[in-house]
Image 1 (cartoon, helix red, strand yellow):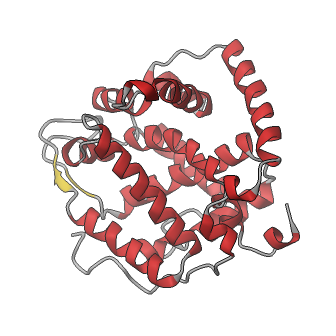
Image 2 (tube, rainbow, N blue to C red; image 1 turned 120 degrees about the vertical axis):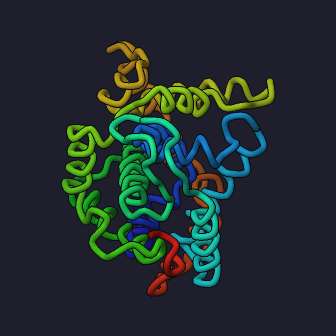
Length: 284
């Protein structure tokens, strides 16, 4: 890590690496394991049936991450407002029981509990991707990233203290949700996960899609992979580890214009979130 990188917030150092977005498959499958998140995706997204919708969604998510991480402030505020408008449209009622939630349960993308689950799983997946594909992070670094990432509370308009402040708290949030049955892989989640792992694509994107599936399965924690029913042997894990060691060695010697997002190379200051973006009354 360069001296310049050491002086920057860790959230910028980690998110600067383009390759960490390959960890988002792990995050999405973990998010879909929450039945209310899965319901929201199934009812309000076309990514499962339309290649272009999937690509637009992926690009929009990357764009928002770059704006909120690196700024400039006007771009970050605009990104947060777009997220809020998107969330405004994502609400509904379960038509039938799903996991522990009975029919008639309401859901909303503005629900702090659901926002917290999405945040926690995204942070965890990002740090795992950095660890596997870029460089190992020690416990202090993971804690620092978690603490810095809580700035998203203000961008999303959730109460302070909603998101975990440390790696241990983040892991505990995931463990408790799984043990309590709040998070459970349902048939709907399996259906959506199959599309995440093999998204609609043109024939010439077949090799890239297979790599995406393999990387995502390799990054999954054992409990989640088993819950979805995807086989993964010890030999698979050894091959994955060897491939990641080669990838890390290659990634380190690539020029910055390939490794890093343009905003990261520009050294923009960390944008400071305003007091509130989410409109009052959006979640009731």
